[in-house]
Image (cartoon, rainbow, N blue to C red):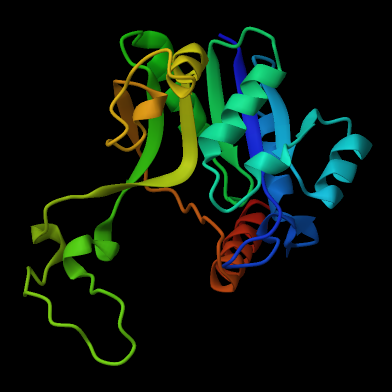
Length: 238
């Protein structure tokens, strides 16, 4: 089943400026996402959606399909849904499935993608599959409201992680969904409850649980961490 893989990379960022074109081992962060997407096989077509001039030049030089994203979809208030809809409708070919690939996640694993894709191919009653991880130490029960003046009072909970109720969070790595249903919801042709997270992507969504090291870069600290992980991996595999 053909998949349109959309690599999304927008200029600017409040946390780390131009994070997608920051360098790790002399390679742009977004290059890792592009190379990952291109490696997924002949049934996956890659398109890069961006407003970054340097990235557009890179795509032209390397014969990579790209969309020069509309300025209307490059503001801080825009949702990723707008970018996905623009890409799906711009690439008019009939893709039953679409895959979202964030350009600021350089740590990539094809196995997660193929597990999600395999599930959707085998379970037609599901509309989407999304990668998730156990919240573990970053459990909301252990969190405080931010205050750099005085530590807020929070009720005591379990000290041991294994005693906490499990919570999961989207790690940003994989989101595959049925293109037509998404577009119909996005355009308002199918009604859905916008109160619920990810509901625009489907009514039944399969969580793909994994424990891979996935680093969503939004800060300098996360960039340094990603560089350490990628450099260590290169050393281990030679």
